[in-house]
Length: 400
Picture (cartoon, rainbow, N blue to C red):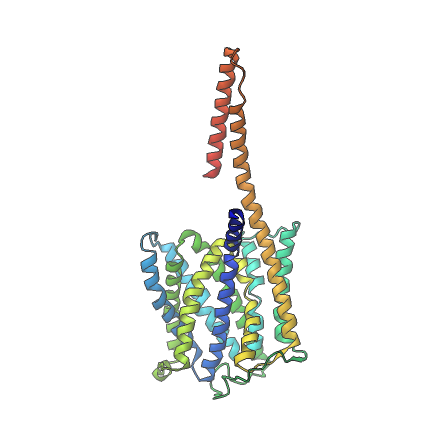
């Protein structure tokens, strides 16, 4: 009974990073829906990004100061630089590039380009030796094939519709109240090929920025392992950068006013749930499993957005969405299987050697000669004591 309970606890502990990243993708899906509602209300999205990081900093800073006040290491210049770069690549720059790409192309096209993040992260992680390619092993092949399946599923979901599938119909459309055309997301897509090419390049630049942020966050987690404090530092740096950029684009103070409406809900939710909690969870999962593990969950957001959109935005599900979702889930499972096998192999190799040394030392001590041969007994006893001492010292050195 106790062994069964222990196995269940170990299984749940192993699934903790997976469950946390699924929660993060639910939060991201909610932000995408609220972005549509805020843009439909006429809110400038550069200002939305600025408020998002302001709310995130205000939420995280007290938590970091209280919970990590005793074990927080000294804030060095390298950590400040990493926080500035995290706020730039993971916050202000990537978000504003993504928004501008929406204005020049379309939301569907920009969302599809964003699914290149796992592939870019995989290439960068191999370049910086944070991941091993190892195509000769089954786990390496599973990670590569799973990443490609996730990208292919995202592209299929975005560009192929197919027949309409009527699974449910809630007849709820939160966008029908006002269709204002002056917002970025609500504007009609440009037909100029030059604008479309520029929008594609901006979306691709946003993917590169996000992938670079995951790599920087990996390095920062090793040098500054305080997830709330590092996320608060990143959010503070991102808020300064985003506010400066938004002021350069929009100097009319009426656009910065927030009321008790969808604008306040959007900036509060995106700041607290995404910039605050989700970024801290991402930093934690990167420290546990690496940047590739985190990035491979990104295509799952498209599946969740399609489901939520069909429920509350009266968007229709099509065959392409279902097939793409199946490919994304299968690819996600392949990468998780490969990473799990690698972690099991690493965890099993270290204790097995130390136990071998300990067992060999105990065997040397137990095997003793008879008492009638004192001289040989003393010599062999001294040898066994020396071997036990060497085995113990080697085991201790391996543990450290």
